[in-house]
Amino acid sequence: MSTQIVVPTLGESVSEATVAKWFKQVGDTVAADEPLVELETDKVTVEVNAPAAGILSEISAPAGSNVGVGAALGVIGGSGAAAAQASAAAAPASAPAKAPAAAPAKASAAPVAAPSAQKLINESGLSPQSLTGTGKDGRITKGDVLEVLAKPAAPAAAAAAPAAPRPADPREQRVKMTRLRKRIAERLKEAQNTAAMLTTFNEVDMTALNSVRNQYKDGFEKKHGVKLGFMSFFVKACVTALKEWPAVNAEIDGDELVYKNYYDIGVAVGTPNGLVVPVVRGADAMSFADVEKAIGLFGRKARDGKLTIEDMTGGTFTISNGGVYGSLMSTPILNTPQSGILGMHKTMARPMVMPDGKIEARPMMYLALSYDHRIIDGREAVSFLVRVKECIEDPQRILLDM
Image (cartoon, helix red, strand yellow):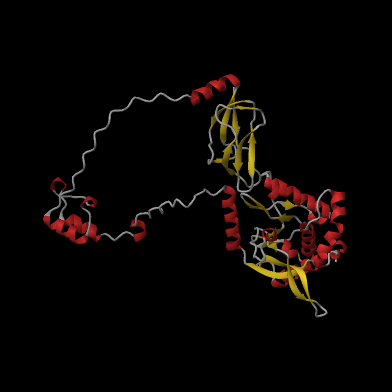
């Protein structure tokens, strides 16, 4: 008895995947629920487990194949029948009898042209093989040549032969784009083509935040089992600002503006395959410890390739921290259909003029807010970023909702 291995439901709006790799080969014994094959969608990678125990007797979709939901991936056979199938598949097929070599085809003779026709052919640069003769015995007449010359020339683009591929360079390596990388490219280009994207900048003094973290980080980790990082402060600061400037938390749907009275914050995470954005849901109702735990879990799942479709579905606003890679300033691209994204950057000590006129070295970070100008006005964007700056420079504002 055999069991089909099929592509499972991949999640909302995902109907196709690419077979990334098989963990087993034809003839291998498999246990029920053992991972068999890895599928790559435009959002996450998904492992398909064996629906039954037995022997992998057939692989219907090898690595690199594009498959839809419900498509056959392979077959698991029972221990006896499958072994026979696998053995038969592995045995070399008997070579078919060698067919007698075909006699080489006789080269076709060039068509014969009348002297007057040949003169026109030479002058016009036509090829005799491209002409059909209507004279006796297929002879090309002057009229045949004139008829061809009278026809309008084909467009150069259509007539031109396709350009030859660039010769391979031994110093280069060509790697097929993953489905995730192609989807990232599509979404980023879509954002640039669709939104009226603009970026505004500000800078934030990290002195107070550093002081709070240094004062409470040990007790926080001891109580909650997670480190107190910067991201929880920025998530909570953004929620405070989003409540005050709801357009930054909204999106455009057709000719309507959709204002969202919930705060699902996407946190961009780098993986070996590309950037993904898992979503911290209901961030307004979460404690700092809950936010840190959620972000830490997403980081581990991204590293291990265990993020699910549900982890990355939705989101009302996104935060991207290029500072962890050393970026001093950037203009982040919107995560459509969202209308705003905050870019964090590297903290660096810079000389700053203080209110009393003194110059001090302060730990400063540039902040960038990219936004869709179709829905968010400049006043709203700048005011949103100022509110985030105020919350970070005086973290008590977050706790007091001020």
